[in-house]
Image (cartoon, rainbow, N blue to C red; front, side, top):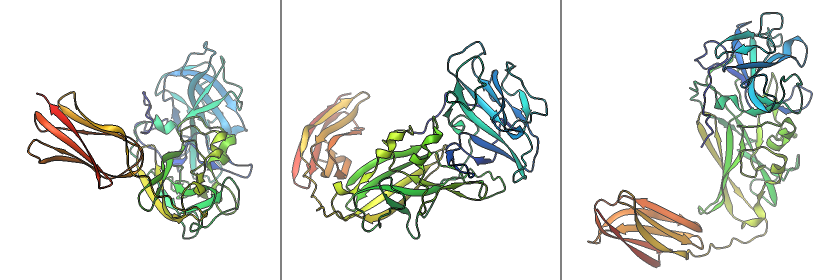
Length: 431
């Protein structure tokens, strides 16, 4: 389930109720020669339009006005909380404001939709101006310490801004020639293994970009980072060896020092993010399975030596913030000198049970101590099959299946494991 905020905000440029082109988004890989970093906002582009007016997206108070780098980088920070509150609070950053034209000043109160300034004319690739727009937090009566360790970039603005009418799904590109994904020895640069000879602890690398469907006029600048990438691995017979696991999610705090936790940037899989090229190589296995990007995520990998030598399917799924999803896959083979262990027979670890639920529904449950095939059917008093709840492979663990009995009466749930062992449970459905 993708994160959704309790309160939505309009766009900061007119028209306020329409989607605008984006030249960068939250989490993009960036490197203009000074070293790689996460793009910690969204760049709302105004193709061929200069000096557009900027509007506040929420009520608040101006807690910062100044520049981090000459005239192009003046910024306003507007806090959600009044200026007399000095604890940590959240607010909005509006950057690339023209200091030579009218703008709001430190201490001003603004209302949602108010004009707060104008975009500075951008001299580089001068077909556009843009607003760098971020959700931030800081402490103190003013937030004049930028850039500073106390100034945090805390939430992807695209999880908040409305409307959100993007209908374009992310796009996978080959990570290597004729190869959908790349497989690199765990956190080593330029040390790749063949997809048909995967050995040891490896990182899985996927090359992905997203677009919104609203163009900047430049195809390169339209390429953005997906919101979330996750992955799963199955053996060729369908046995799941890695369940669906979040690789990266660009939802909350971005720490620029962790860019190499997410992006691969060596001579083989070289991430780029500048005016000329946008190529994003994601290390999807650098994760502990949650949505927080942290240094310890580099301990994540696929330990191919823990599974037998056979063929596996690697699945990677990319989703944008609006829920558009693309799934891609690749077949690989492990060669660690490990025999394929036959899965244990499916043995009950908890008895088959059937019970009536609220509203005259039925629930059948049981536990398995091993993997195997399972067929679960519910019969009525005449022996007729009412519903086929399961017919396929199940792994170990607890399993529950709900069904709607067509009428009051006596029903029997029958479970057959691996085509031989059968179990049954009686269910009485009352009016």
